[in-house]
Length: 354
Image (cartoon, rainbow, N blue to C red; front, side):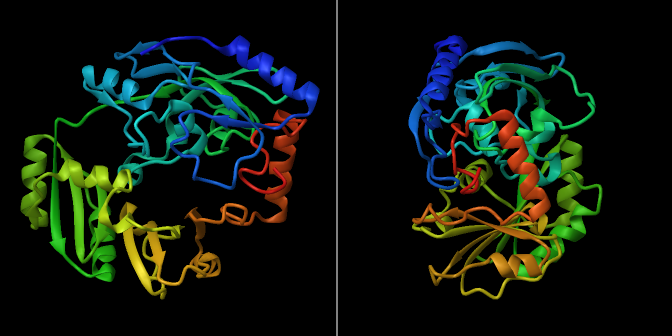
């Protein structure tokens, strides 16, 4: 892996863009370029700013530059029996750490360990005004005002160019086992929620094509007890199944030009939408491929006290993310003005006016 600090060159590009009033399209490997609204501006390549800056396995903390490939980070962690516990999707062989933070997407374990933002300890960023700023550090701590480290997670590069990121990592479980059950979607959601309220070491859950999948992890004794209590059939090749869900290579996702990502309370009723459904995270995350490409799941999600995202769609000029309430939209605009006063960083990627 080539290690390089390109902070100075990136600052020069930002300063030049500010002077010329040129919008910039931030780009790592491009593996998640499909996500969000259409990107605009000159391409600002970030992959050359790469390399692990510091890794302390005993302290469970890793700091790396944003252009570092996730596969390199995961390999280094694996050498020490550790991992990124939220299982971020790559969606490409060269996916980067910065792209992971900018998109804020987590994989199958999200319901058991928490979201990406809970593991970000600190960031060094380059603002749209050309300022180099450091937020947070190498330990968890509360600060007054905005938690800027968390603000950067899921911002899609609209608030700053991520340079360095410090993350909390965790040891890998010694063993894991996936159990499968034949079940309808409603029954699967009920089982997921019933078992989630117990002490069972469930680390991931999914339902697709009439089968419920539950992954448990821990010691041999814990897995033996869980299997005795839960029943079901052991899934051979389970790692490949969970990888296919994480990376959306499972047959469910194939040919899904219109893919909706729905977040609702775990016990919510199934949506009355003709099409295909895959359920994750104890029922809180649901992927829907509607039969009708014109279907809009926004209102139905809102009625269920949740929200909908057009995760994949041919038209990337339309709204992708849920419409923000007026007070929250004002907060977003003020944050954008603070971190990117000239509006040059990924303009319109989140919302048309941000």
